[in-house]
Length: 251
Image 1: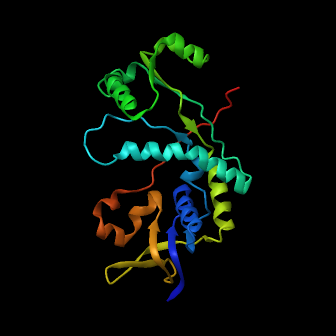
Image 2: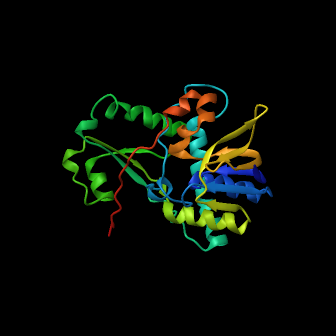
Image 3: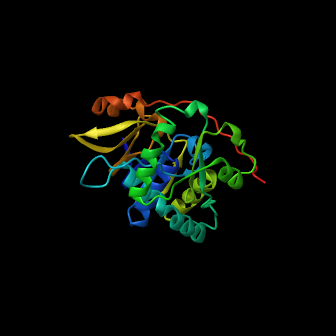
C-alpha cells in the first residue's frame, strides 16, 4: 500500500540526508525524510567535524576529480554555517583553526614521510596552503606537543572544523522550517523498484512511501538493502564499524 508521495524521498537522517533534504526543499520541492532512529544521531553526532583535504597531484585530464569536488564542498561550509546561524540561531561551530600533520617514526615509511613531497605538490597545484615545518615551528603552534619523536611535520593553516551535533541540529531545524516531512523511528526495509525505476521505498511494516526521486543516505547500513545489493554487488560490503574519538578542552 502506498502511503505518501513526495517529489524527493530521502532515506537516512544523518548529516548527508539532512543536507540533501534541506537543499531540495530550498529549491521548492516537496521532501519526505525517513530516519530509522532519530535525526542527527550515530556517526553524524560522533564525527570529529574536520573540514580538510590532503590532495594528490592530478593524474587525469579533463573534468574535476575527487579532490576538486572535496575542496569545493569544504569551501562552501563557511557561508553555509553563516546561513544556518541566521536562519536557525544555531552556531554550528565553524572555525578556521588550521592543522598540523605530524609524522612520527612509525610513519617514517613509503606511506608516511615518503609521500610528503607528493602531498605538497598536490596542495600547491590546487591552491591549498601547506608548508613543511620543523620541530621548533610545531612547538610554537602547539606548545604541549612532545616534538622529540617527530621526524617531519606539515602546517595547513586553512583547515577548518565544525561541531557535528550542532550542525545536524541546525540542518534538522532548517528542514522543518521548510516543511520537510521528517519521520523518525521509520525503518526503511528496501528500495521500491517498479518497471526498472525507483518509485520509493518499502518500510519494515510493508507500507510504501512513493516519490519522484529517491536518495539513499543510509550510511553504514546501506549494504543491508537487498535491491541495492542486487543492482550493485559491491554495496553489500558496506557495514557498520566501531570507531572512537576523544574531545578535550584545549585551554
